[in-house]
Amino acid sequence: MRTIQIDNRVIGEGQPVFIIAEGCDNHMGNMDAAKEMCRQAKLAGADCIKFQHHLPDEEMLKDVPMSSNFDIPLYDFLKLHALTLDQHVELMNYCKEIGIMYLCTPFSLKAAYELNEIGVSAFKIGSGEMTDIPTLQAIARLGKPMIVSTGMCTMDEIKRTYDALAETKVEFAFTNCLSEYPPKYEDVNLGVIAKMKEAFPKAVIGHSDHTPDLYTCYAAAALGASIIEKHVILSKQTPGPDQTVSIDFEDLYRLVDGIRKIELASGSEKCVHRDEDAIRSWAFRSIVSLREIKAGEVITQEMIWSKRPGTGIPSHRMEEVLGKKAVRDIKENVLLKWEDLEA
Image (cartoon, rainbow, N blue to C red; front, side, top):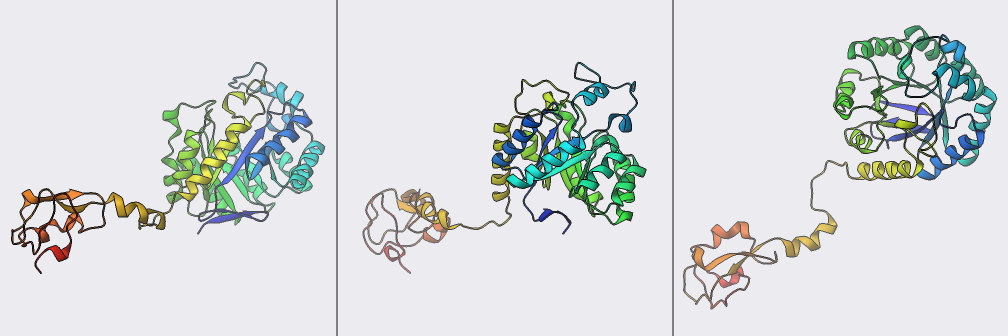
């Protein structure tokens, strides 16, 4: 059974879904907001709150062309609002204090080294770094579990990264992901989760979601995703590059609650459960008389049919009743008993 372990939490098949509240940069550089996100994620029942460590000059050129759903270039936004390493240390300690796991995404190798130095338990890798094999291999050599998103990638590209990470012996997971902000639902392709499970047996498979609601996350959990990652924001009115793909913490509570209920409902045993017994006794059908039947009469179909409750002769045994003689008078509209009939 494929699993990875982050701190004391085992993640993978046979385990509860690992739910990551992706705080990204929705704190807008405000530490009070970032800490409140940690607290709200804990209250909502998420397993983890995750932020991002950006060193803009390490991860991009200043004038790199890029798509944006925000009103300033991403480079400039990060220069203004990215958290410092000291702030990440403060957040990590705060998460320990309140009892929620802290994770962080490094967007460059230097950022990964810095996070490693402050003692992160694992690395969450964004889709933009999915095909950067040299960086992934260098991060893997740090020996900590990795969760890698697969947005914008073909199955062949994912396979290339899978093979590279498998050679390092590091524990790792892939999350099915679509890097549209927000995505078209017809592009999400949740069926890929099963294909990834089949194609990449050494990886735990999860789902990183950018839709503005909860439906695809519920479906991903039902389809066997071991990890669900969802962007969160304190207020949908807060501006930022991830605002359109983020849910608030009331919705995060609903997401966690729904996934835990889906887990409870995902067994595969079909049996009669204890709480069904009382209903069974009245809801099933028994054979009843449609008219008065005299002793000595041969039972015909016109005399009997099925009605509730299910405490008499079961209706599925009607063929056994037809053709028998009544040994006593039977009133109209009563349950037949075997002792009413000849042996």
